[in-house]
Length: 104
Image (cartoon, rainbow, N blue to C red; front, top):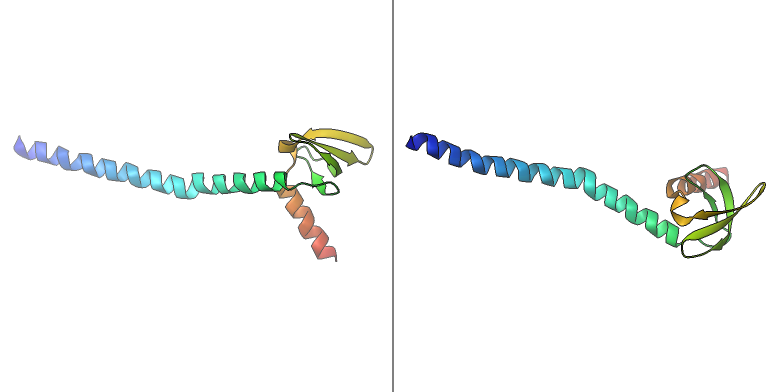
């Protein structure tokens, strides 16, 4: 019986080490990159200024006419639209900048 008790005590520590290792791996490969992406998106949305060309997450392309705390007024081809700041896509704006730089 002593041997069995000693074996289960050792496996408890192994299990804790395994779970801790899995948490570290999840943090490094899943949670941390997502937090970094969120931080970059918030920085992009806070730096939007009048005259910037942006794309919404719905695919609308427009030019920024005015910026409020939570909304942006866009000039579209067929009129104007007011959208939330969170509806502006940071990845689409980066793609548009790369395309315009390549065309120059």
